[in-house]
Length: 193
Image 1 (cartoon, rainbow, N blue to C red):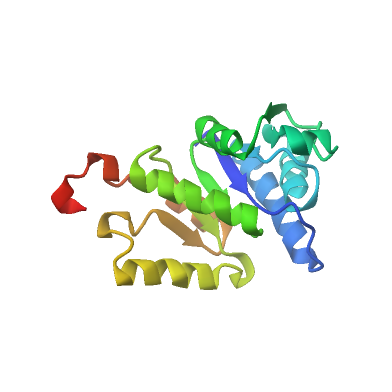
Image 2: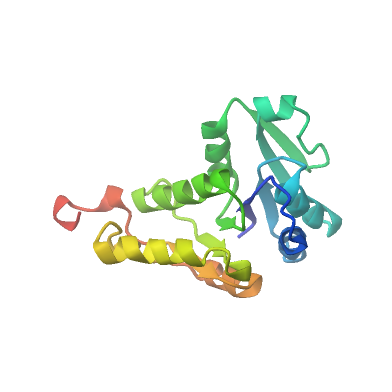
């Protein structure tokens, strides 16, 4: 994995653990020689991931929509900063530029990015690992919900292990590195669906 897209919030929570986690994620990736592809902002967890990676000598590629770049939240310290017309192009760029995805705590936009990465993997638009760093138990309910979707039958057996969730970065990256792509929907027969 040469580059990983990191999905996270642009907010700064009151609990300082979240900002510290984001900086650690960026630094950890840089120390492993893995470039960061992220939302291109300088605020909140996004900015902390970028700072952590840059301070550790890593590559950071930001992808930011015009509207956000024009509101002066773009991180001009990035190794590369791509400005795109909108959110759809941003998420496509994340997929095109990275070898996998890591989601750390965030809000609605972060969840949108995570679910799209999983959906695109399920369909076959990419075959990269989709990781979830469940720090502080932040994603416990989401992991349970994903299991419930599988239990009820809304996630096919072939796709039940697309989401790789771990509570530590080392364990998550190890599992992502050994990820075996599944059979995507585009390659399945009607009887398998």
